[in-house]
Length: 213
Image 1: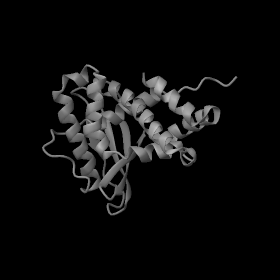
Image 2: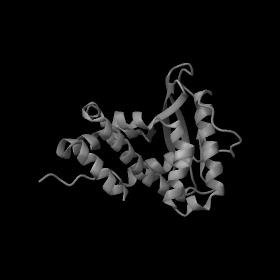
Image 3: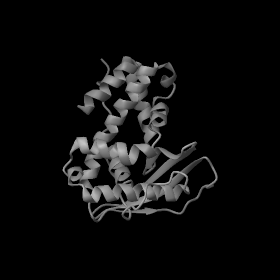
């Protein structure tokens, strides 16, 4: 009998999302909405600045209020993330086999999975956490770039976090992240493929939703 499907919510993946949430929630207080047409590093910094301003002044986030976290993610993170592309790339070849409804349901379920992990990261971010953007190594005129950062916090080793961005008609969108050498999409692609091969696309959606309850 196949081993029950489990998403990789071990220490490594949790560390990935803690670092990712921290890097999107740190910087100086925001004064304006992020400009998706700014230089890639400036755009990432602006998103971080805006998220930090909300994090510092909203006690509901620190208390783990899921409804408020969902609201903040919707307002301050998802507008700058191509979440459909993230889900499509994680699903790989199975995305082409999915119906429109299955694609919508899968993206929504995957979003819930990531938000559930973000909620823990947001409650653990403290005043000692700091983000430092690394020198940009790519071509700023390219349509697909990587922005590198390092996250530090008291009593812990600094964590390297890279963001992959694509230039869309609406401007830059984040669609993948790399924490200490592990890309989010690549990590989930194997998990998705295993579940779909055993229980189909609907089985994957059900497994995600069960963990989101």
